[in-house]
Length: 437
Image (cartoon, rainbow, N blue to C red; front, side, top):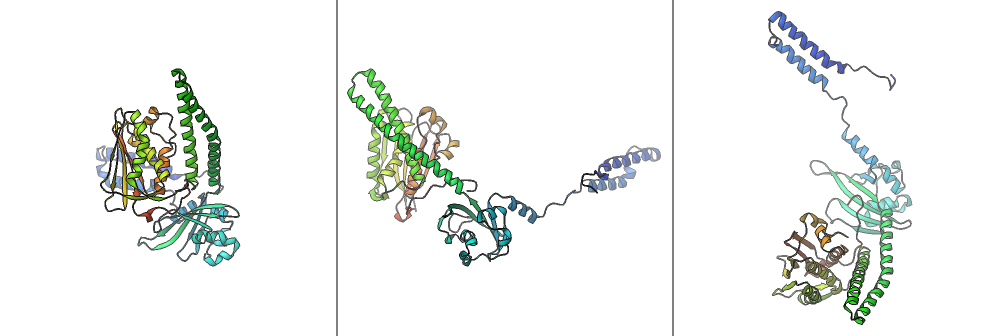
């Protein structure tokens, strides 16, 4: 039979047939039993109903086998997928994996992958991906014993960056049946990101020189002119150039942080003395806005290992926000305390200001994000201060958090390790997520 030829579907006539039989039974009842109701033929009617539902609503197609569905998903998946058993025999190698590794599936399927294959040029990239410790550059993203295992592998000649996700397929008893490795080629994405960062860095460098000159000019004019009218215009120019310089410097800092070259000089310092220095620099702004500054010193003295210039920038950003977005005659309270049963000290900055919508708190440490009410109070901010602060604090081995309620103030807190072995040994390149994370 030709595929396009229509076939007669008897099942479509079954409802008509069923209703016809019911009508005949009603007529029989009226003629022979002098009743409209079907009680005398109830048994026959029940059989007809069962027949109707069992026949008319039976599935027309058999469901796909789970293995068939799994194979279809793997085949069409945009990232490379390699499935292999605990003995490293390959069971599946999808088309995307063929493209990444320049290997045909038939060359790999049922083949045992082992480190010795590294000598074979055609299989080298695949073996280095299956055994990441053999790769030229490995960055482990996940914890050592956590699943899935996530890593970033970098290769040269040609440049290639792969992000891999390794997980297990287990049976109901927890026995490992197979391993599945997803391979995402993010080479092009990272090249675009680097180009963007380079552009921002170059543009900011080029802007900083003329802006510095403009700022210097306004400062000199401010010291030269005595007329109030002239001073007012000069001060506006001075403030505008100062804001522009801060945005440019923030962009440069972000670029260096994300490239892992911000540069840190760690030294042991007394935490209370360090905070007092940062607070002293913030006092003039607080006084000009009528904000009271309170430092609740701990009875204990804490030695911390920090980069004073970088951490000073982070703490200054937090205090600056607490002052600028405070209420009239408000307060900023800074306190420090040792965390119970943990080798960390906690620094807290609490204000009595306008607060932030709790729904927006999850985005507050992202680049360029500013609370909707904060943008209305001061439209000139860059939205980079807390992002920079977060990265600096994490580089010191600490964590940052925030709590806030609208019109009830904000509390920003962060930790610093008292155990210096908890400080990361080096800067890391910030990963911008694409697809899988």
